[in-house]
Image (cartoon, rainbow, N blue to C red):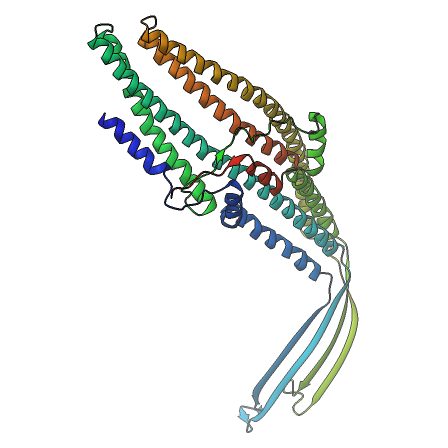
Length: 446
């Protein structure tokens, strides 16, 4: 009995909310996670990093202006046969401005186009991480709820086992029962107590996992309301339609396709490095006493020219770079085709999971009703001496197993729906709002 009350007290300390605490809805948890999740934050930072690559590459197509200036104090001595005259001291002043505008540079053009593809890929990866956050949040939230459901089932098991033990003792005292029945009931109670302690730990662990995601410890969560749960087959109702949508809209597919474009632009850039470049160069310079041959002289120079540069021989570097870029393009192509096949497989898996979990939920709902009737009948038979204590305990275990399976299948249905949309590139925060309507706000303590 002490162990029984010990488990109940521990469980109560985890599931009892503080005074006037409001339960955390799944929508609120998502908003918190969007601001707190480190993976999404890193993806946003990466997106900013790669977008700046466009500006850096664009700079290679725009004019550049460079200013240089110097001012110094010099001294010069004239001498002959080891005899030197008094030194002449003078100041030197030099400054100039140079403007360079690339006119023909195919390598820079390819680099600019490549940078835009890199930024677009980063956008796709950010969209993927935003969708991943929705699924991760829903999975963590449902795991926490399932742990609480298991704790509720465990408490019901402990209570029923205690009642069964007391009834077995009363029957023995009246001469209708056996010591074996008491031992069996005691063994079942001990096992329920041990499982209860393990489940208490899982409740705390699942809530801490949710805390890591949203940044605050959830004292209370909203329970899933079975009567609000909408069991609907995927729309459109053909898996091929979902596959087609995934190939066109999935961020994973887009990112893999853009990686191929990036690799292709790398080939163009390396090939262009062999071609000549032509720059327009204009400048103005001013100098005073620039050297000891022009002491006291002032020069002001204006210049404009076309400069051409072309590599003749690089020791094989250019050829090796082209071959390397082609190999990267082949690798990106293989990764793209692998990603396409993987997405198709996942769409089929999640599509079928949604359909199968709907059937499972309906089957488990009927199973729970049947198990409840069976347990009630077994208890009456035990009271009449027609059934044994083992029969009652088995019926109780069967009922609790059916309830666990029903709760698990409901959460699996929610996650399968989200995962299907995520894989197809159709998941958005609106889906979290829809699912939020399937939960009932728990009553807070007052």
